[in-house]
Every structure is written in structure tokens, then in C-alpha cells.
Image (cartoon, rainbow, N blue to C red; front, side, top):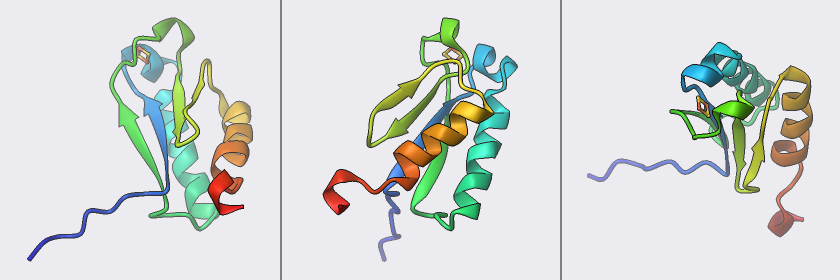
Length: 95
Ligand code: FES
């Protein structure tokens, strides 16, 4: 009777608090979702929108897990680079 509790391999936390939202946080979330879809990683990688992470001076803020890679002042070019480095690259334990 228990429902499944899906746990993704990787998570991209995108701050969509008011400051980050104003600076494109919401669009970044969409951008990451599109990249996940294109890479065929739906279900394995998730985008989670967060409330303010207390780093508003660096908006928009993104964090990728499990690498614990926190990134300030994110834009599409940086997002693409970070996606390749932290999401597409195999995790050390899978090498
Ligand atoms: S709104 Fe994103 S860090 Fe505050």
C-alpha cells in the first residue's frame, strides 16, 4: 500500500525568492528543466524552486546537489556550463 517515494540522483535548487525572481530565477528554472528534458534525464535530475536562501546580494542563486555547488549571479551561459560540469559529468562514485 505504500506509494513510491522517488529520489533523484541530482537536484538543481533554484532560488525564486523575490530578489532572485526579479533577476531571472524563474526563467533559469525553466531553462534547467529544458536541459534536463533534452538530456533525457527526467526523473533522474530535478529542479526544485526554493524560497530566499539569504544570499540576495548575489541573485539569482542556484545550488546543485550532490556537488554542493553554490553559484551566484547565474545567467544562461553560466547555467549551461554548470549543467555540463555538475549534472552531465558522471558522479565520482560512478566513474
Ligand atoms: S531571493 Fe534569492 S537569495 Fe534572497
